[in-house]
Length: 492
Image 1: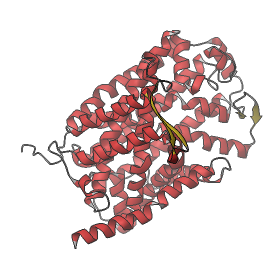
Image 2: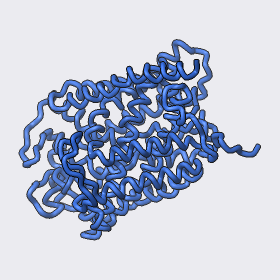
Image 3: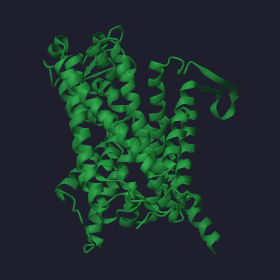
């Protein structure tokens, strides 16, 4: 049967799906967040524990989540799972948060990261290169500056959205080419570090007091951690590692475009998260082999600053310079540009499908419920692009991400609980795949992820972010009833 225009096309194979999962997960975070993690926990052993725990949580979530994706292999992914397990309100609150900042905020942040690292190769791409400035903007409480970094970030988003609006095959082609290139490049970086870049200075320091738990401040002063303080420090440190490992669920948004979705989605999530978890652990081992963990924030060389005080937290760049010399900064800039370009393509491709499913339920803008001639939700893709571009302009996307990291994990917990809900309410429903290790593995995810949420919610310095994340979610309640009543009137 020939494919028809205006209909979803089943064009995403298992390989394509694995590239989308791994491509969505690996952006710029793995090259940056280990610096902050090492300051919070203070030793080699606890740095690796943070990444190992993150991997356990992510893998447990993926192999549990697969049961829902096999039951409901439809466009919309997690939105659909929450709707079926609970109700439309819970699903809408997730979709609202996804559009407002979770998906679009990540897209904006990754686009700006791409532009900033492009500035290493092309110095004119700089935030100091202001194209125009508007003085005394009331809402901003000051001036508005539009820099070359913002221009390049927005241009990237418009280009990738255009490509993805041309059909799912165009989008998956970029994911395949750039995603596989990224994985090969990361593998070569790891091998280079293991066989060419090991530094005796790093070895002698990093593997002596492996379990010494100390928190370091910006000036390099250390404070020993008690057991309770260490647990809190690990939880707070995981904000960065979990963010770097997020988006593993995005492939579920494209259910109707996947070949054999009831099998392919869960396999791609398991394989993709497994590959990325392994790479993340190995990259951190390389960091520890080529750079001292502890450093001096006033030093001018990469070995002196160490992992903790890598310039602008760019520990990946510091490691590359340690292995390859000055040329390493340029090599890493190219790698991160490839990584962020691939990540944003995969995230852009997936997100529009969730808003399409919401609009199909009459809970979002009606135009987003239409497919274009290429068989993709073009209006939803361009709406996502427009909002992400505004976040690039606002300069507040980083703060917004902090606000919703709590909500991201909270919705994962609610979704995994949905497995238990559906086992009770729909015991006879077809389940081509059943959660591996049920009920132990899903419960493990719920306990570990809930502990992370509890730490964020109760920590004096970070609770404001969790509370504001909850506020953003709560704001969706009146919006839900507004959309529902509006469309009821239009349909009557």
